[in-house]
Length: 177
Image (cartoon, helix red, strand yellow):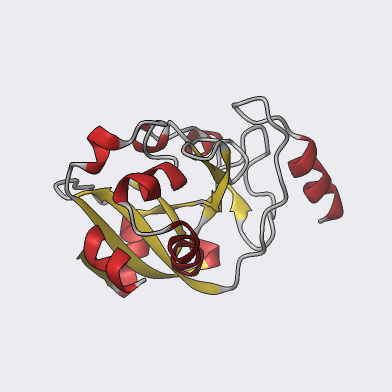
């Protein structure tokens, strides 16, 4: 485990920054997938999710502006004005950490990364919707602050949906975070 942490700190990300240490994942947690209101996924789709507890803490610290949140999640460029005008939703899931993987570029698939296995090569790459803040380090890059964002995970839609899910307008979530 120590060598993995050393590797995470020493591995360069897609943005030529040194990876920072990840936080340990609990055995069970609630995660959130933020997407455009009209976004749909199929049973074989992979979602990029963050812990709801981390997201709530981020909102308490950074505020409830949709554009700023999209930047914090790495889903918007530095100028998030146009993306923030769209309608967004948040989908909440209860998951087991064994259902998740961490997108760690250059890390062999199946390595323990603080309670979650590293993703296989296909799932470790940047997803189209989150390409702005992809770090390859298991966390997002906050495009608004040019800093480390939230720990990020990948999960198959059909696996995450097995225990059910809750969908809310993003503004409603932000108002009660």
